[in-house]
Length: 165
Image 1: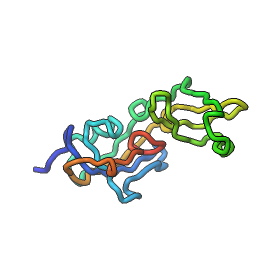
Image 2 (image 1 turned 90 degrees about the vertical axis):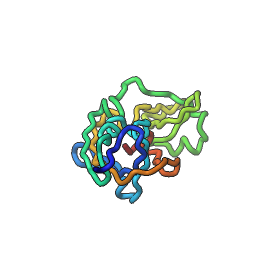
Image 3 (image 1 turned 45 degrees about the vertical axis):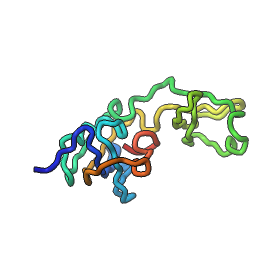
Image 4 (image 1 turned 120 degrees about the horizontal axis):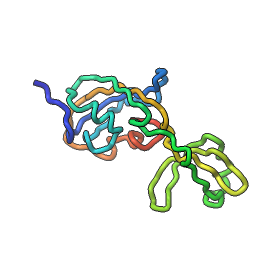
């Protein structure tokens, strides 16, 4: 009998992420680099972790996640005004509406902000995750069981960046 993925399993997995219309936003297949995760540790979206439980090596599965089970619904109040003086002048000159940049809050937590508006005093950022409010589709494949994860093997985009699972 084949070994089954369970909470705490350390596995290599491939994934392809698309929107419901089929537009692809990310794929570990295209990078030829499966990610290594510990199932249940919160490294990927909870709905994907749940889908992996019970799978075997070589098995594939299609997973549909509504926005509330992916990166959440958009928060219409999630905006931040950052004084232009907090950035180098050359940086501000290069910013344009829609640019997504990494920001750090007062507690040192990093997050992405998308430029919404630039006025005389401030840069207004939309602090919603770029994938918030979007339904997502994933095709996942368990590649192998492994013994441990390393920071180099886990792609930071998996839960934090503009794209990823």
